[in-house]
Length: 178
Image (cartoon, rainbow, N blue to C red; front, side, top):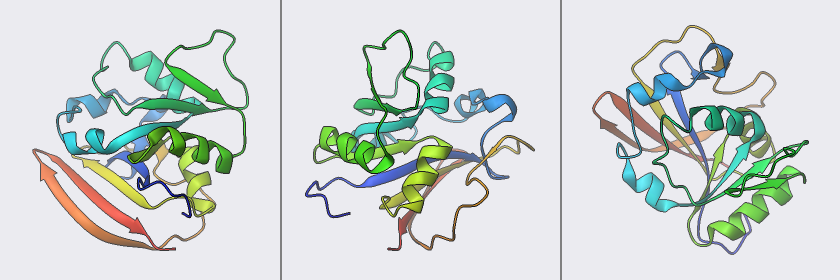
């Protein structure tokens, strides 16, 4: 990216071994059986803002009573339909993906912008806006659900640069080749 910010745009994914980032019905409770924000605290510490898709935001709201200890900085939700009742902890954006990334990057300052949500991440990847992909592979097979990458995503070449294991969780990191 050509932004003056020193932070990177990082797609952050938790994935089952069979390639799903959410289970059937968009369930994500299986994640907390294997990891917490304390599993890899350096990721949270390096994150200054998050750009989240509306679907992921809704799933997160339903799960907020279960796990509220992740602080990734300012939260931006990209949506076509902002909710009728505002959320004081979230800024809802209705712009295009490039503008949403630029807005969230400014809020992140010199830290990373974390991208969450299958559709938002795919849009960012297709437009060349992503610097890194970080994947937590969990020791579970879900069999069905939301795939890591949606159908129709063009080939994107990656360069592995880190893999670390903590308990049963393996964190893989890749640079996106531009």
